Length: 136
Image (cartoon, rainbow, N blue to C red; front, side, top):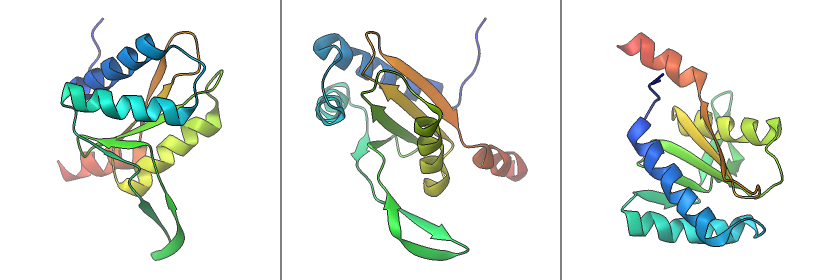
């Protein structure tokens, strides 16, 4: 059964790059090591990305001093958040979804290098989907 995903081709390429990093390094390194390696792999594969973009948080229309810093924004439309943990939890998912909300983007890829096999999840910003459906 084939299911369509938001930014399907782009996410396929990002996940492929992450799989290559996991194949080369395995599990057991810190998140920063995987971030450095994935940045190099994105470059090798020609995947457009920005690392550690500062996303400014607003509250009731006012900018806060705090900001969010996702690991990558790829293709100017996908948040890529890396973890190196034994298993992903709802806090990791909430963080990635909040990044999409603050950035005004529709999709986050949560990628975990800490397991024996690479784990990844597509997380959607429901607010983005609602806004997109009302403007079409």
